[in-house]
Each structure stands twice: as C-alpha cells, then as structure tokens.
Image (cartoon, rainbow over all chains, first blue to last red; front, side):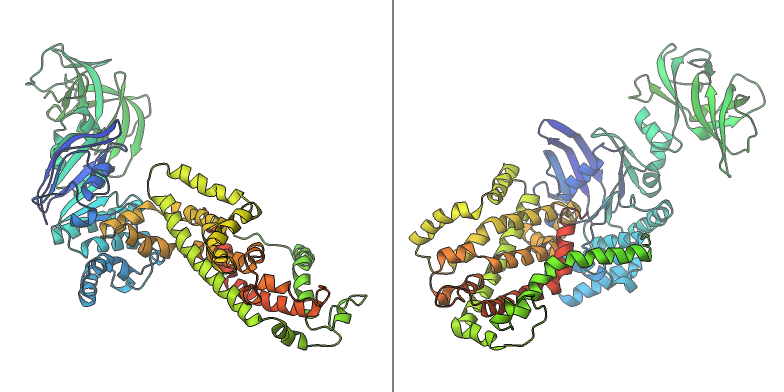
Length: 354
Length: 280
C-alpha cells in the first residue's frame, strides 16, 4: 500500500493537449474515484498512472518513488479493465496466478495466493473453468482476483462495471467496496457513473476537458459544488439551473422571482445562475413571498417519491417530492424552494457565489 | 433458430451436391483404381469404373524404378521445414505489422504484399542465377528458402496480421501490467490465441510445398534429390511415354498424406480461414 502523488501531470498527443496539469494527493488506503463525462481524460489519467500511456509532463509518485519512466510491471500496481481482459486460453486459476508465475514465485506460493483470493471472491469452485464458461459477474470477480492475488501497492479500476446489467452492477459495486474495506489497498477507480462515484468513493475527483473541476468527499461535492459543471454532474436527477439577476425582491429569472437566503455576498443587480436540486422543492398551500407557482408538465410516480417536471416562469425544472401528487399537465401547483439549500453560480457557471 | 428445410428441398439439395461431387471425386477414384489395373484396362472402352482384374505389382515397380523412398523423404522433410519456418516468420512478421508501431509500417506492409503479385515464372531465372552463384543448385536449399521468404510466406504473413489486428489490445495491456515484455506477450498470449490462424497457415504452406513443381524441375537434376511431383514425371518407358498404371500408383502414394492431413485438419482449415479477419 502506498500514497499516490500526481504533480502537474500533463498529456498531449502531438499538438493536441488532453490533460492540462492535474495535481492530486491520494493517501495510503484511500478509495478515490475519477469521474467525468466521456472524453474528459479520466481513463487517460488512469492509464498514465498504470504506465500504459506515457506522461508528457509532470511527476507521478507511487510511495516515495518517481515512476514516470517505469514500465507497468515495475510500478507494483494491478489493474482491472473494462472488458476484464482475461486470457481466454487459460483457466481461472492460471489467469489469477499468471503474474506470480511470471515473477518466478514458487508453485506452492502461487496456489496458496490463488486459493486465498478465490476464497475472498467466492471463486473456489470455478478455478478450473475457462473465462468463456463464466457469467459476466464471475468474469468480473476473476479480473479482481487477478488484481488482488499479487497484493500490489495500488489497484486501478477502469470502468469495471460498465459491461454488467444494472442489477449486477449494484451487487458488484458493493463487493468492490467491501473488498477495499477488507484489504485497505489504495484504489483509483474510473467511472462515468456519478452514482458509482458517490456510493464508493472516499474522495471524488471530477474531471472535465482534461482539468480537475473539484476534489472532495462525495457529500461535500453534493452539498457545495464548486461550479456549475460539478453541480450539474453530481446528483440524479441533476440540479436545476435558472439564469437571471439578483434583485432586492429575490432572484429574478425569466417569468418568476425565486427566494434568496438573507445573507449572500453578492451585489444587487449581478447576473447569476440559480441552482436548486430537485429534492429541495417543498409543496405548499400557504401563499407567501417564498412560494412560487409551478405549472405541471409531467408527473412520474416512482413509489417512494414523485418526480414532477414543471415550469417555473419560462424555465422547465424537475422536482422530487415525498408526497404523492395528483394533478394534470397544465395545472398550477405551489412550491417553495428551500432557501438554505440553494446554490448561486457566476453567470458563466465557473465559480460559486454563495 | 435454423430454418427448417422441407424433405423435398433436402432431396434436391443432396442431388445437386452429388452432381457437384463428380468433378472432385472422379479423378481421385480414377487415379486409385487405375493404379491397380493392367494398362490395357485403363484404355478400355467403355471405361471401367471398377477394375476387372488387379495388378498390385505396379506398387512394387514404383519403388524399383526410382529411389521413391528417398524422394518421399525429400518432399516430407522439405515441406516440414518450410511449414515450420513459414509459421515462425509469418507469425512474427504478422504480429509486428499488426501491433508494433514503427515508421512507415503500412507502406512496408504494402511493399511486402506486392510480393504476391509477381508470378514465380518471372523470378525463377534470376533466382536460378543467384542460387547458382551461391553453389546451391541441385541442393534442397532453393526449395526451402524460396517459399519461406517468397509468396507463400507473404500470404501467411497477411493471414497472421489480419488475425492479430483483431486481438483486443486490453489483453496485451493486462499482460504488460502482469509483468510481461513484448516477446513474452507474443509467445504466451498472442500466439496461443492465434492457433486457428496458425493451423490454416500450416496446412496451406504444407500443401504448397508438397505440390511445388516449377522450382524442383529448375533446381534439381539428380534422381536422389527429386521431390515427389517431379519424380512422378519420371515413370516413363524407353520412348518417353508414360507408364500410366505405375505413374498413377506413385501419384496415389503421393496424394495419401495430403488426404490424411486434410481429413484430420479440415475443421481447423475452414475455421481458420473463415475466422481470420472476422473474429472479434
């Protein structure tokens, strides 16, 4: 186990720059998730840490060693690939023991380690099978077994769950998390799925266009996103944004005035973006200045909650309510934004104002 | 689900297949049966599909008239060396063209492929001059070196490259993380997975070498050095006319290993060619 330190890591392919200087300190035993939309550079960054892509500029340290120029095999890392990349011509046991065998470990030691890993992952009965004889979830487990058998300093996961169906994904998510809690090996995990990021990470790194947008604990990112991109990326359904201007009466968006908290460090008249998460609307019957009319567009009952697409002034937003709502499209209901939970961003979305 | 074929269509299909079979099966049948007929029966009219009398001495004469065992050995070991050599060279070259990024790789590959377009009749004279200078005429070296570095090997390289291109890159990356270098990745991961392609390369290279005719008659001059296709032409009487039944007996013995190899390996052969370039 080891710290992983990225200092001003950059990557370019010829004149095309894809990673624009990433600084990141990952502590020993930490579970860090790199998340972002496709093309944001998260996989490239992971592959640079693995040694499968060269580092154009910057310093990468694993433990106290600078590993920029080391081969993957000398970095003491293990990686789980999106397609699992199991060797089709080898049995589960050979797949798992392959790296140890190649490093010249004794047969008894290999068998011991493979049995240990198989025991942890529930693969003991499958050791003699070939990858083609396994289900998706079992292959995923073998890929993890191949990673843990060597007891590396760092685990790297490259979207390992994206080939599984939704139900299995939730199960494997739990298994990976449990495995990390058991082994406490430093883990870097790449995904485009913000739910995976939220549920698994000790810390999330949100990437966009080859730059770090924000680093923090999942709920910190959820509660206090640093900019509009992070605010919109983290959370599902995602945060609603209304463009407008800060006035004495509140936040003037097109066709509606939304309530603001009493103390905000902004100038009256400033243009801004008003962000509110779907669950931060309350239903209300009592008219007051904090209540706004919302025209119903679509009601989707989910069971425990009701998702309502509604129009505030001219902007369409999503609200999630604990109550069951009966209403027809076109009807008007009254909702109260929770002023304590709203987010204000600069007009360009780049910075947080409150 | 497979579409069900009606019994009538099935009968028609088998009928067509039987007709199509004739041009393939008849020559083989004629060769085998004629090899044990007396020469008068071979030319009997109407033709006799089943021999009326048997003359097994043709087979012993095959061995009396020429050093046939020696010639058999020549063909066998040359084909074996050519096959193994081509498998080694084409798998390595194919892997390099598919996987290693080097300057002008595609241009070099195109130039290599151009080798397929040149007929061997065009190059045989300069090759003869070359091997003459090297003192290799009337040795087996030309029959080994020309296929290993010539058109059959180019075709094999093409087949192997097409296979390796389809091999998922993540497999190699996983092997790199597991600690393997380029050569080990080739021998431990890529090559074992290339078995179907290698099998088809092996079969057609072996057949090509086994059937090679132009090169032996150009380069070889003594009977002990002859290969089988060349030896077959030597079963002639004093006037240069072919001794048909003996020649067909020798031809039957020559075709035997090819038939055996094909019967054993036809599945790999068809699969190998069918999957190459298509396998995901």
